Image 1 (cartoon, rainbow, N blue to C red):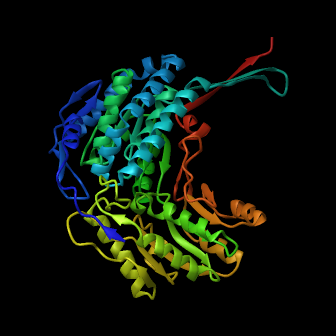
Image 2 (image 1 turned 135 degrees about the vertical axis):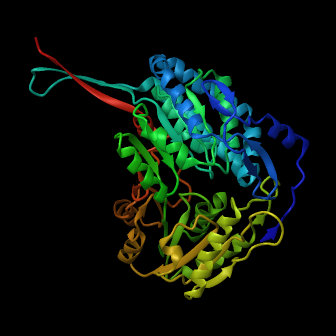
Image 3 (image 1 turned 180 degrees about the vertical axis):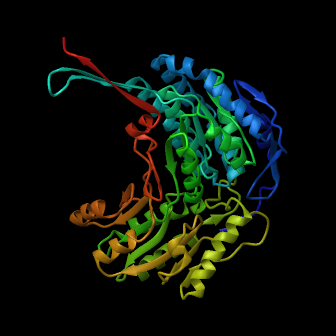
Length: 495
């Protein structure tokens, strides 16, 4: 692995871009000051300040919900075609401004610029997909089985929504929530993560340029997430809560949402198994591992967490993977030569290193990495461990960083048991060339998603979500818009 620690000096283009990013709250179609202490947003690759923005208080959150409630009826009554065309204009504008969004994500989150461009494409697809779904909200009209009447099933927007987005995919997580809500006819209050709020602020400006009316989308940035969110969730006018983040926080939010019986979508933690069978195409498995583990510096809920490799090929798999890892170029993601960026904070580095040291203390073997490079920024070397014991913390906990921990198995039944031995169930990865085994794994691995001979599954047209402690509800696909719709059944008696 080579390391590039540069980029502390901003280019003129970056300075101009940061100056264009709004630094206020967005409430009822107006940029507004908050009443809390300003939020300082920093570059994880350098530790330097990017921008200082406004901080919402409890009162600011209440004003944002007031605006969403006031706009709810008119937006729900807006023809589906009009909503669709606004979302499509937003998609087109995003393509025109993709360079700005990619650069901004790299600066505030740290991901390599090539990955940031990929996120613009991925995030944009939610705008395009749900612009098409907005006009396909249908119902049902049929005779009941007894022949005594006609059943009419219709769908309506669920109502004002509160959307809480994470820091690791600041554009895609915003579009994945906002686009279906708007397509369904819902108004929203969005609270982006404190660490990466700039992309959301720039995106809401784009939505305004695309024609989203005042009050339909409101954005509050805050360092007091719990204090600001609690009264919004407790307000009986709110009808839906969507959250992406840790399982611990998700459980607390579900408990709050239960008081008003809110519709909830929860995309929570993961502990993804990555199973490599003896018959797997090993090169394809290694390439899949690089995607599933090291994309976004391992900071993804879909990241492979437990590498469960057949004992007969584990040594060769580890050798090939280590070669690929050692070829990564680490540094500030804004450098086009870099393909491996920093972690989001020094605290994240500490957490990842603690998991590595725990595994080593329990008998794991280090093949590469396990160090912090000298210099500025919150960097951690991509790491590969073998012989990771079952009682290691990294087997039970979500790593959320660039660490591969390899364990071995002998039989299919053992692999299945190991894969399912977790409270989480977001995604699993399986590599095998045996068709019958592939189908057994689809039926046996207890997750909401699976990558079969691939390390990347996310798609705007597919339902994203997990089972068990990984959450409930789905985002994306045909299922995604239904999360923002209520269903009404009417019986018309036969005359």
